[in-house]
Length: 258
Length: 305
Image (tube, rainbow over all chains, first blue to last red; front, side, top):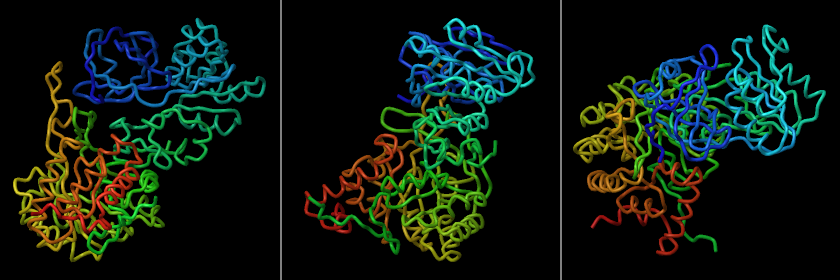
């Protein structure tokens, strides 16, 4: 039932400054790309993509940006949170050679998908983009999977100097991939979509309230609900959505340009 | 075999191709969502309730599922009447009637909102006098018959399009309130809004909704809605639109027998997906064919003995 189930935080891990991972017991299955609604009692309830998928334990990884994530950031092992979900469609993980492009905390959403494709004997190249090298995380984790990792930083402090999109465009010219999967700032994902013709999937983020397809808060395009019809959308669908990379809606339903 | 039954209906002067309407608050805050619901077969769309100023609504949790229904306290989030115009204008070509839901704290606010909605081109206005969880608005205005009459008549003299009044089952005497709306020249009554309710989490020992109290909808409230429509039908002569827990064609027929000329669907979108409108239309036709009813008006109010 779609009601928060109270659970104790199993572990809290600092990834880098302002970014933490929280794990909790959740024996039910979750697909890469799906999300939970995380209730921080007395504060808010927010959507969070799954970043760790283990048999009984699942995790989320987030950056301290607003009231809810700041409150979540302060929580410790054994503190109680409410979980409902998983929600959404998850990635379609097909193809023998996949390019992943993660910008900022977007890599948290992609990591379980990368692990999944490697387990299923496909190969992957992962681009991790960040503003600066101190904000890079999950590099070690993904290296352990045996995928090719390419780093981009806006300031050039590590790897390619420039955006993850620029780096992706370079790689796409040199190498043939079956598909591109991306999660990160929407403007970045839009540029990536416009620059490729191979199968494309992007994970979108919108302000959410019900997460079960009723309230309409997270709708884009012609009534596509990010909570149910997404959060993963393919390139063909996104090309017909005028919102994509242009605007989102705030909690009052007003358009806010990216 | 083609259905024999004609499921078109009229709410006073407003004709509907079929009696299934989208209830206010579900997938109706932007033009794209409303277009999708129209494609799913709804006979009319009622918009999100819109006020004069943008309003963010309450923090989450704002909606949870319970055993027999949905509990919500969104807190009337909306972009405000000025920004909402852009959404309505995008629906100008729609052949499906769009009904603008509005909420205000007093008659003056309702008049301004009603006039703006009319300018945007909506087919009718629904006065939200029944939201159970917003301070100064909704039910707080809508439990006083005198105030209902004043607000309804004030809006009526200032717009040309039909005015519907949506009522709450939380008021002690819903038929008295309906009579007040009728005497204010309302064109139809919409009943019921959600029922005030609460859910407490035992582990945390606190209400789950951030607003603590919310409005209960879905299966559990259908008998309350049917009773309200029945009582209202005994006291007023204007059309009634039934809403509350309608998940199937038979639920719709039950409301019609109680006195409803059309029905609205809200939580049903969750239980039976977006194409619930098509499904219920088909179920109404099948029921009517099976029971040899040729038109909706033959069913309306038959349960009044």
